Image 1 (cartoon, rainbow, N blue to C red):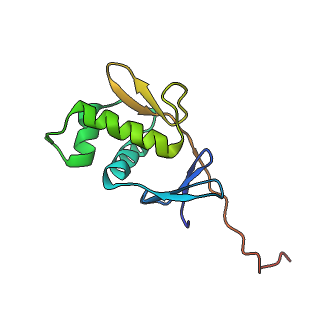
Image 2 (image 1 turned 135 degrees about the vertical axis):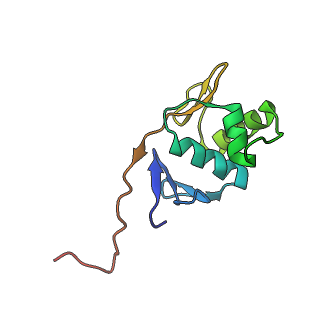
Length: 118
C-alpha cells in the first residue's frame, strides 16, 4: 500500500479504507470505523468523548447513542487485534471517552526485487 501509515504491525492505507497485519491478510473498514480511525489519528493521545466520536461518524448534532460508540470501538478493537484490558491502540478513559495511544511508525519503502543495488 503506497503512502501507508504504520502502527505496530498494522499498515493502513492513507484513507483508512484498508489495513494489513504484517505481511499477512488485508481487511477493510466500514465508513464508521474509518471515521473513528481518522478522528483518533488526527487527535492522538487526546481524550475524545463519545459525543465527539458520534459527531465524527454522523456529523455535528447526531442522534446516536453512547452505546453505539462502545459497539463500534469493540468492533474496531477486534479488527485491530487490540485488547480493552491491555490496549496498544485504543484506551478507555473511564467516565470520559477513548484515547488513541498508538504511536505511528515510519513505513519502510518497498524495494523492487527486479532492481539491483549498484
